[in-house]
Image (cartoon, rainbow, N blue to C red; front, side, top):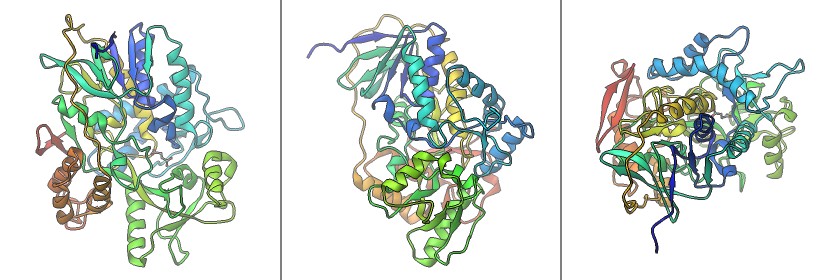
Length: 483
Ligand code: SIN
């Protein structure tokens, strides 16, 4: 076999969800040569699946300060304020920038942006496109604009196998059975790791590949004990296990009911609280689900949810939907500063792959798509300031990334699920998958319950751990104070 093709770029982006697309587009619009490496066709990224919207303080009765306060309240004493300030201050302008790029957000009957409500938000501030098809609409439009830019190369169905490292600096990406991409700045935007858990709302490829690539290159990883379990994932319906019923539907009045038919939770509380109460009700009653009543909700606003439910034989206009929590979003990831920069020169991370501290212990709904664009733009600009690497030698051989076994997904669900304890987490330390072991180490070290991390054996929150993040630089995590 001959040497792989070599692509010379200014910026290499691993992943083509909203974060990767936005970063790539920002760099391309600045005149840079950009290579985007996507393991899936563009239409199968996690963003494409995202039903939620983009949170931004746009209403007359709203402000970035209120958005910040809600983000901090949901994050349960762990939000890094500087990161949340960046998001909440820049999100309104980012919505306008997306509109300028041709994204058509839903409007009310006066033609103003229609603002939705989701859990933990004190104001209507969620912008949608196509009702619950926001991720798809935004990703599709950004993809269309991106591929029309000169100097952009999109490598679809191409896997990043390794990072190209020279003298301690990341200088590009080595692809599996594909080209070697050399770049000044390499941005990991490969999504999260929620598909490591058996029951998940995520596409099967959300296995933390970006985290593993970065960690192997020496990047610090943090907050892996915090995975958000989305309350309303369909269960017990063949072929639809884990299908997400967007929280925006609860924002429009859908209610949750236990086996006795009674409501048991404030449906628009932050997600950690709703999922925990569901788990309690299900455990006490020995039932595998609770019921979502969306009969009063205007179904035309959420066409893809309603259509999927009807295809599975459930009519949400007349029936209650069986739902239970499922792994949805990993708050942890590759540690970055406010410009996506990691501790490894030349390497950046954005979107769900990154951990800026913005989400703390429990992400505020719909902050993540906004984060993708806000931090995607910042990282692209910073990556363009990197020096051009010197003349390249032969690309090194890539080390294959470990793919989790089905057993790992079962073990993650059982031992690092919504409620954990020392015994299960210690068992998980013996798992064959490196990320499973890292999740176990972080979760074992955090001897408290906070946000989405619920320890049966440590039910209280420890105020001494406020703002303390579990950071893994080698094998073992240690707490670091982030402000
Ligand atoms: C949802 O639509 O409920 C999910 C959105 C999000 O995770 O922010």
